[in-house]
Length: 191
Ligand SMILES: [Zn+2]
Ligand SMILES: [Zn+2]
Image 1 (tube, helix red, strand yellow):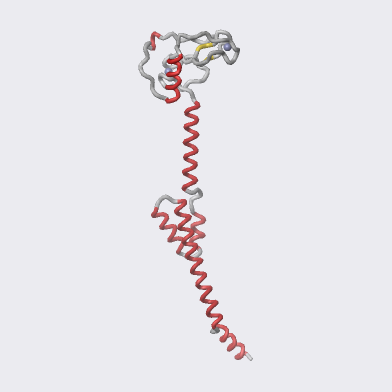
Image 2: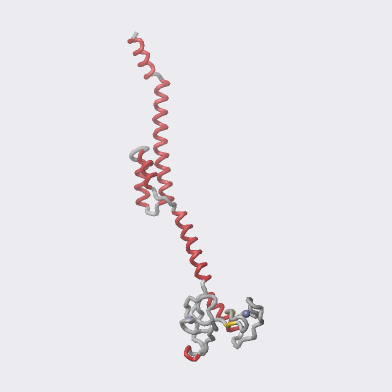
């Protein structure tokens, strides 16, 4: 009885079907092992810039089999290189936007507020005060937007105002002005 069972078991282990199934299992295990290593290589290339480190990660994907990819998963960089690049581009765009939004003196490039009448550093006149409500008016404005008072044509001609505007936008240091700083007469806002 025992011998019969043993011989039938022996027969199962040596049957063609068992050998085929075993070979198939080994084949699948090898394919899965190589596929995992390939995935680690691909993922490492997306996340790591250094080719040596990518090679090291691929080696870890191969050895030890199946455990190496798990270890790689635990220690791989959280962000892909693409993520880092797009984040940097966004930051750069934001910085440029902020740099444009902040007004600066067209002569000395000092950061100024939008309601300054003169540059506090080089005393260049930036805006005129409205004669009615004392609001700071841009050189190009024809009417006070706060009290609707018409603005009398200033001594500053349109060309000069446009040039100053263009300079402020391009952040270019201005050329020498005709009037020396000490002779300029800034208009001071009445408080
Ligand atoms: Zn200035
Ligand atoms: Zn006004």
